[in-house]
Length: 402
View (tube, rainbow, N blue to C red):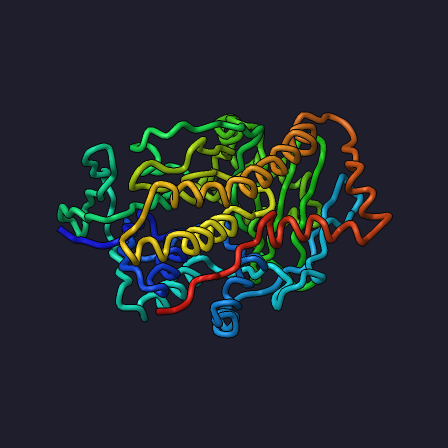
């Protein structure tokens, strides 16, 4: 049996950041990561200004920016053949007013390396949480398989950072509100060539939509399809997929030959969900385990990191001093509920007001009025930049290293 003050299930951005911040504040932490390393295709490899502001407060930004990355400062869109500017991040009041495109495994390895500098931090890999341990109506630990062996980790607090298919969330029995999404996404990549744009680009055409993220030597592309239509898309074969994409991506037709088989398209089932209550005695959910975000704006990872910062601010002292109460867990939800709800409301508004009509359209796609106003009054582009880059309630590190 392993005993600790906090057991974090999931070694993603929320789990590692929370583990790092708690260990830095003098709390004993065990993080369970079911894989052997972080080398997986996460697809959401965007580090937003809000996250880099946290890194700056921790004194880590300069070292962080030495990792391979490139910068995205503006976002543009095409409605049919008409190009529009949507966001300009250069005006954000932070040291890094841009989105850093960086493989998420580099980001996670960076956080883990700095967390290991604190004696209270322990990262267990090949460690898959199987079940919560409860006594007297309170969660007191986790049963896990670690390196193929059964293990029990006893903790004053278990935090579920295990994503949209969270075991922790499922076993708590907490009620989930499903807000819905009209689309799914098929991810693929094509090469980036000299002369291509360096912006984030969204392309809206009758019946279809593509979002293209510049990843340096390739484009990471999100082919937006109607909810539940993936099997229909696959049934048409790769030739039909390439032909459809060619109509959505003028200028990239020849490069679509790089899509050789349907296996080159990876399905993401989009969900927008939120727990009604994020905690029970002895257990707390944050990040996607508490509120699954749509890919719109690419903000999910960064919202999860903000959750981790808020949780560490509110829980570090009670955990360190062995005086954790249910009210402390409720305080985390109270702090982060508004930004989660506001972000999801924004995403649902874009889904219903822009994406769903585009996917259903058979004629000319109209530019939404707010986007038209952004062309007339460029200062308005700062609003989506602020919401995407910083979020509705940016958190600041309040704990001190111990």
